[in-house]
Amino acid sequence: MQKVKIYLAVFVGCMCTMVACKKKDEVAPKTAGKFGLTQMHANQRVRKQVIDGVTYVPYETAKNQRTTEVANFDLGNLKASKSFYFILSNNGDRAITDVTIESNNPQFEIFPKSIDKLAGASEDGIVPLLELGVIHGNRLNGIGFQSLLPMGDNTVEVTIKGKTQGENGEETVELKAEVKLFAQVMDIKLFKANNEVDLNKVSYSMPVVEQLNGLGRIRGYSVGNSIVTIENSGNVNITLEIQPTNTDEGDPIITHTLSVGAKLELGVMSKNKVFALEGGGATTDYKRIAIGDDGKGYFAVSNIF
Image (cartoon, rainbow, N blue to C red; front, top):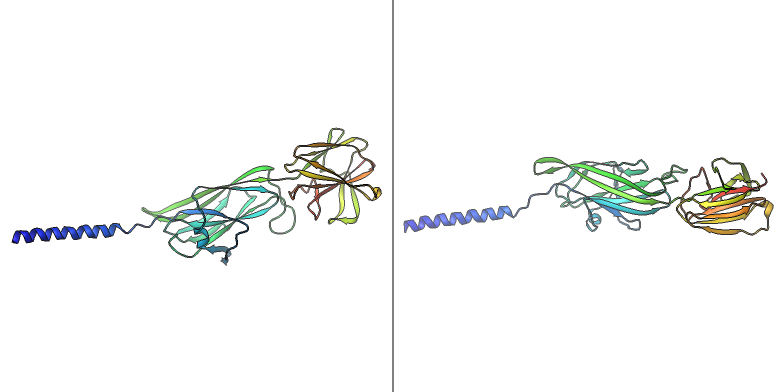
């Protein structure tokens, strides 16, 4: 009987040890912090709050959207300067600290550039909203022209870095996001007798008796009695209007449609004509083409100046 008791005690002890080990294994270790990024669409409305200059949205907003470690975003066609918004989240359990955000292209401005702490996914709270301001023509904040992106495809890399606690102590966590878009530009080339007219060199400045959509004067180019041709050198379709001036009152407005790359021979100019260009809202180089309040580009062509 004593031997049986001894064996039973040992057996029960082993069982207790096994049960204890099993309970210990059920507690999963916390995972290191891990960035997630998703685009917030312009028509999406959520509650926001600003803390120390950084805009935050509820964590549920990020939780309900797809986030990714390898981020690639196609922003589509860009007609003029615009801001895009992205939700930055932490898909790990541990917090990420000393977060820095930067782009490799100065025409793609990112804000904020740093965040002190990004809480883990297991913590309810708020997550930061990143603003990517793309400069293409008009200024994002304020009045005036800044610079154009190269016409067509543009790509920028946004790098997000921070520190988190991993299995072996502090480690660096990083996310690289590739963002691409297609920059649209309205532009034309003007020819007289097959020789291109330099639109940066104005022949004359023509006053407009009635303010022409905010333009008191428009740039003019002298073409003599040469055959005039206009070419769509941008990457958007253009609606061209040839309007009569004060000296041509009563003449009709002539409209043409120029597809990308198309050329239109207009023949010899009679007197002085005003050209109006409309490219679906796409921006243009103000040094070449003056833009009115209506978004149209204006210039004059004459055989008498």
